[in-house]
Length: 235
Image (cartoon, rainbow, N blue to C red):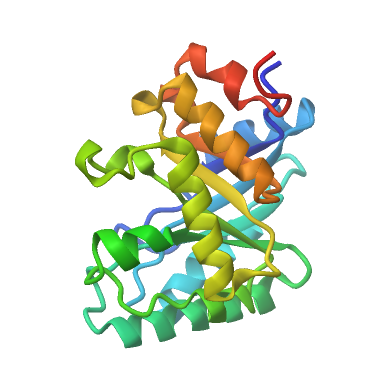
């Protein structure tokens, strides 16, 4: 195999419908098939940070979802939406409140925060989310999943590079308050990722003590990148 141990599956999408999961008749068989080959499944969704109760209802729906006795092995909050709450401090407060209440809801089940990368919010676009609440989120969740998307950077920036962008984001994230939180690095957009950059991301993640790494997404990952992405690295 290619060494996949965990599948990150979008489980809900806030489209102004009643809170719930996406296509349960599709999600369920995915979870069952993954579990049958020893792959854990984390359900993620993007909260809008408008009404915390509304966002929490989606977390609850993902947590309660069960199919033929199988459930998600964890939940991840994709903390990147900025359009609903324009005030960045209020948005941060709502994101942290959601993380705290989600942790209480899940009890001992795993909760992750998919976070914007520090190089993005500090250097590339400081106006995107000033004061992004890394420290407060770190106190509420079990793992950080930084979106280290070097593929979104320009060549002129000097940041479009798997190793450097990943290493830089990990260092800044630890300095911002996440020093004790395990990391799973989410690398660049898969179909724009070269095998060399995938290998660089894996090296930076390994050297930085990450518990895992991945790219977005499975369907667009080119076959030539898998050798670099597998846990053993290139042979």
